[in-house]
Length: 163
Image (tube, rainbow, N blue to C red):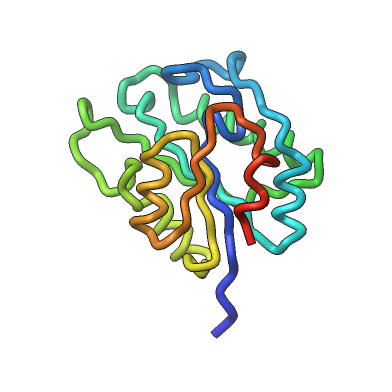
């Protein structure tokens, strides 16, 4: 069996793109943050980069899967243009007020567990960087060390917390 790999999971809004408060509903409002060097450093240290994001605006009908895909494709391309490979996106399309309970909406660990399973990730050597307490809780529940940052805080400021 191949060796397990290490990964850094990243929340999306407020970590990889500018936090807008509620939901980013339109591609025009989607502004990528400059965390290129920090993520390149993590990638060079051997970490796979994955995104785990709640997207309850889908359940609310505030934007479509197509609009979300457009944002994610753009995010992936902008980072790729700076030498950073975001391997995959895991998102929860549910919202408790509209679709009831699910196992993927953070603080539940479902999104992270999907990534761990799909890519044979060693959770004990992996991290989750997020700007909400629920991100850290989801990481802990999945056996991953959570790192809490402020919204739009440069990831470079927490690189020393990652082995």
